[in-house]
Amino acid sequence: LNAANLTGFVPSNTLNSVPAGNLTGTMPFNVLPGGVETSGSALRVGSTGTTFALIQAGQAIMPSSSTTETNFTITFPQVFSSSPRILVSVANDPGFQGVNDIFATSISSNSATAFRVNVIRLDTTGGWSQQLRINWQAWQ
Image (tube, rainbow, N blue to C red; front, side, top):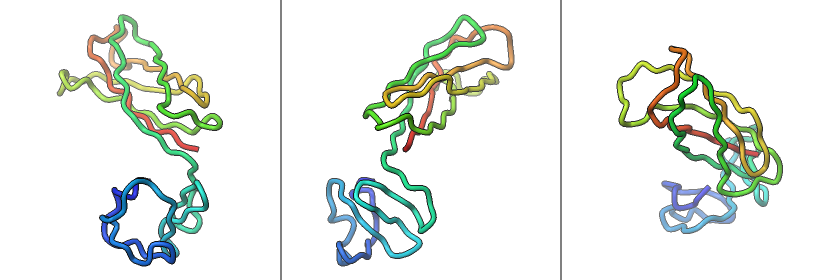
């Protein structure tokens, strides 16, 4: 979490209520119970939340396809230490607003460096001319 994105005050023994807007760069921090806690290089929201060592997200542009099904490999900007968990969604090309194209996605392979996303068009048996946006989030 980039400290520059924090707003308000961050109460902790380490920061001594320094206004978050005065923080720069990235740094480990702790917040009072029920908030964000860190332990070295991991982040956990709440006292029983999932611990995250690395979170990455992005948007890839998938080329058009002449077939109903295709796949596309996305490389992570930073290598994970092992295969992460991934969420994907597909969005229309901004030049094709208002179209009724329907797509589904799945992950067919996943490694510490990249993943492959499958895309299938559900509303017709043909391909598509738009360049789909593949939105993704990965974490470990």
